[in-house]
Length: 168
Image (cartoon, rainbow, N blue to C red; front, side, top):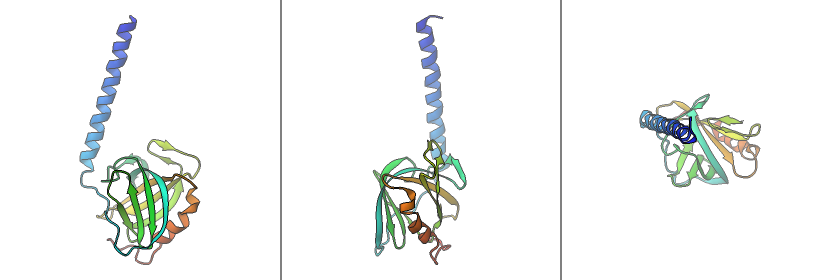
């Protein structure tokens, strides 16, 4: 086989892979079209901390390799995690602010693996929260500076709030 023929075969295979990836992502977006995160921070929420983050992904609960396209948490983004007395706000670049009220938060812990990201031991924070229909999902974030231990106690406190268990 000539060099030109080999290049054409490789280009053809690469094109097929890219088209398959595109079609798979479109199918996932259609499948998850009904899923959305709660938007808007309550008026009287008192800010207790701000941290720069990299939002990584949201997945099915306890299935870190099964990404969900929850709007507006569909794509990886840089942003800010804002801790309040009423919950957690995710203010991601180019997206409306998501607010996870304490009543939606189930758990917060550390991990090192999700979808296409593997980091040092316990380098990611996993927030377990409920969609509007009560389905638990996991959202993964990475702090831009510092480590998960810097904010995990506050997240755990929010998850254990007395009003936890009510849907908002």
